[in-house]
Image 1 (tube, rainbow, N blue to C red):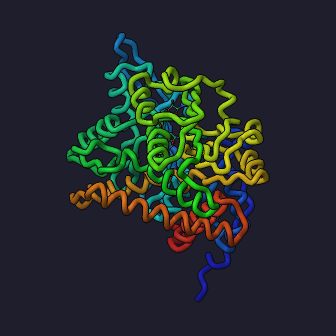
Image 2: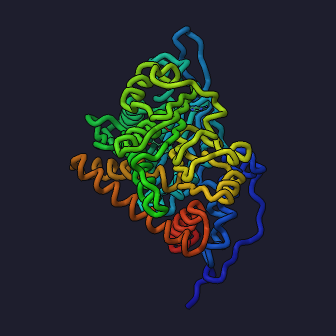
Length: 435
Ligand code: NAD
């Protein structure tokens, strides 16, 4: 007997106003990306509205006592975009420019990414609108703990598992794990990933995203006949993702010729000594002032002579205004959402291959998945095991996306969305509508 849902179609509906972003914010960019994939979803397209509405959106007030005796209030968010395939999973960002639109988009990209690499998670993301560099260590800890307690009603090892993102790290994950555990009365290591090793963290997690960026970069280079040895690389963001990617590419014989971060831009035609550059960043907090390089104007970074460009900082860095001057043959998106849809079109017209965030930076969440599995089983794997499994998953996922893109003659971004959205909406359809 057929079920009424078998014949259901998407009813015309209007998104609530806070979900309509007039294509300006990151959520608007994500909506445009979904529109591009819709024609390839076949019958599953009737469920596509699911992807345009986050499942849960929580906004919390985070009041803390400052060192000077005043009380400050910060705005915090946790968004679970989709949990059809498993618990929510995604990082927590502390940044003065965090907005609800940004957190919603980042949570949605997590849904697509987790489905694209086929880890059993939905997508989620969180953040606090704060410049953490202006807080003392005590203030940072109090803010992290209060935020964790406020979002405690929707997170948990089987519900939603936060992780580090911009300006959050192992220490912050340790405080989050402790706060959640104290509130519920027993130690729950699996509530966050990206923890210190002694608290149930995983070997290889810190380097995982950069390693994934490197792995898909090498695979894509192989497909287009580009040699990594000798390739010139420009990297925006020398943090967890960009720094590790730069190190691995340099180790493979590439030349990292330009680097930009919040403090400035540097250039060296022969390539930097990357370990020395990373040591400088660790000490000075920025690439600026690195002795063995020339200073470069921030705008010039985008037109620098290079073969591979790796944006690994923030969203919406490659736009209609700079996509036309990029000289790279390939862009590997270490950051989430660094390229706007208009820029995507310009890059495609110019034959520049874009390896999209939703596959290129999935290495972090893949090893987060390994960490979560290890915490549940209390059995910890060797770093070699972890790296080998990571590389295998990234290569397989990238290979599948590459095939879809060749078969359907679409960009790698649309191909990754096709793979990810199909998996999510198929799960959605099989679960059915309740009631
Ligand atoms: P991080 O805090 O370690 O590093 C961020 C870097 O961006 C720093 O070098 C900083 O100086 C630079 N930056 C900040 N503002 C800038 C600006 N205005 N112009 C140029 N550079 C600027 O963060 P991260 O963990 O390396 O994350 C970077 C990006 O990668 C983010 O988009 C994040 O969402 C994404 N990402 C991170 C992970 C992860 O595992 N850490 C996983 C997937 C995606």
